[in-house]
Image (cartoon, rainbow, N blue to C red; front, top):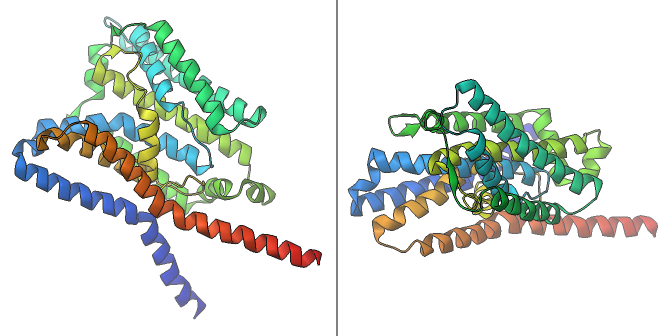
Length: 341
């Protein structure tokens, strides 16, 4: 009997977890059909391919951001890190380089990202700074480094490198398919394994998770290294798109990566999220921006829409959880007082 009662509850939990993703997919289909009815060129292979290619860097940044949010942290240095990685790529991934030289260059770019992730971890775990303050400081430093290395956009990215990254099957980039498969496997790990449970427990209550034997410091470090690595890989695709070392190119990805992760179901309070949801959130935001020219609307509406959608997501996804945790905190305090009495 108890098992029968638990099963519907599990089903409701799963539905609640995936509802935001299904809602975004449905809304994207509706928006796409409406826009295509106005401008049939919206569904052209050229436009859809460009849409998916533009989504890849944001999707990777959002997946990294979801990893940080999972352990109740923010990484606001993501956009600046992507910018620095693109700038570094403009020095090490240039024309007339052999593939082994390009491979070394890619390792250098990833090394810069992981070094930045290590600095963020040290500031947060060793110096005990809040994740927002620590990564905000890192962001400012990275912006300065990018401008110092490339005061003006310069340095052509290797064409063979960019062409390989952006290869497609039909209108779908191969890289987008690969990233989506990785996201699915990551979600399976997150919700179907003990390691994923430990990661979520760390975000929900780090102290309690630590008492139960979870190595919370290791999980926190891993989350920021995943965020840094995702930023580096996203920077490769961003460099492939712009084709040059631009010191401003990735700065907008910080807020949009958080927005995409939240739209995909990540909680600002930690312990919840979805890597698949992060990709869908990134695609959803790019669809909104992509359809505006077809409808004859200003690009400014896209920015406004991103902000409004983030607020809506926070209201619907976070408010019930905030209320639940607030009630739990009050109940715990009442219980503690009763024990003292």
